[in-house]
Length: 419
Image (tube, rainbow, N blue to C red):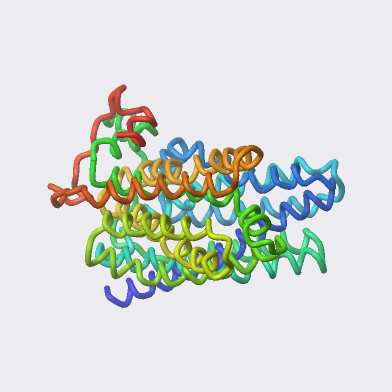
């Protein structure tokens, strides 16, 4: 059994490396491709934004995950996406831009399905005490690819064009499918619920209800959601930080991204130990407070301070996300994991696009340090609030806990986020 779990750890981290490299490179290339075809920066931004839109449908897609065998779903989602990418070989001019958008929307759908599917498969493939460490390793692998994949993707696009990037991405996704297929689980596959089963088990709204009914889990997801929301506000003003604050060329953002990547790798490696020792909520709170410190340092027009800020933000933000992912995996009944994971992902990642747009709008009328101060205040409040929470151990093991019935009051996003 131990060898099986070590093997599964290797396979999960391998998927994170391969799929992370493919996704990062293709996302960058999609924007470059749209820009090359149209000369429009706004149309290029749409190509990259298409990847995030499907996260809004997370609860619905999560219900699909819970109705299908999960490991085969991971395999076939990767293979279908690999085939879909080959359609990009038909893109020759701006007239086929719609095809690029369609494929990137498909990529976004696959992200939701794969994230929810992995969250459901991980507890069946690993011991409970391994989840934090493996999630940290997976985050480290994903962040590590961001140090290399953008450079490789941009270089390959410049030398050989978008078709070459699409072919490479399709190949890597086929490799990811093979790695998924090699994973072995120790629990029986989830069967599709019958028409006579409890409605809450078949409803895509069950994810909202479960999060609302579990205050410890809801608290961790809330910290991650607010942290990501505030991080989006900080990201929106990063060009002004470099240009107006440091008076450096915009290319210096590449240096900051690399330093932040180093912080993310270090944070991911440490996250597992923190989660095993302290549980999920304290590390999430500490991550939010690290994000606060990094955001405040970014207000200083001094290069060393901004570099340190990138390191702190790179370490802090993954702690909040890893803690939320691990809490969902540990505290959710197996039959609900797809819906709860997809719902949590929607809460954590989907609203970020709103703060990106808000931050860009604020820059037109305000000094860049004001949005940064607002971002720091948000993470400070949620981090401090989380440190005051005291929750006892769950009354039941997640695998055997009953699925809560959903009522009309359980089904609102506001109830999950603001309570």
